[in-house]
Length: 159
Image (cartoon, helix red, strand yellow):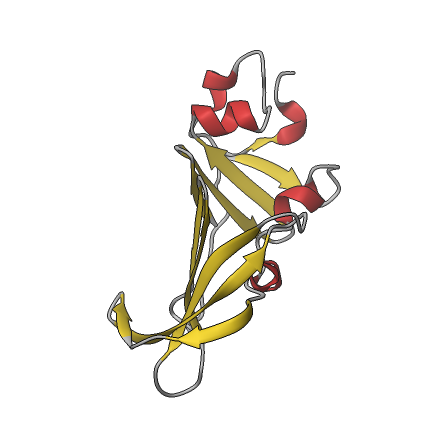
């Protein structure tokens, strides 16, 4: 998962029941990692094992199931004309989604493949200052992700 939110950038991966996270200074400060010396870990991988109290929160957004919780389009739904997204012909379906706390509604579009098996290609939601995009690609392709070798265990971060 790669996030760029309000100028804060981070990458999070899950390998063999361990979450690996790295981010820029804005992300490190926002997540309150190593508050006394945040610059010491900027851009470095931090590992969060399955037994850590931080694991559930860190791994929660790294599954397709978590993606699709955000993609619950509410009607009325309308279909747009085909568009190309990264070279894939896709059909936009317009609707709305509710915020995670259910208090706000955002305009949202999910783009699905225009032919063959219907698969999601991109989801985009926007409301006020929040602009979120999720992309899916390479469906059916086997992916191998290697764990970063020099990750710092979260328990060893200075507090």
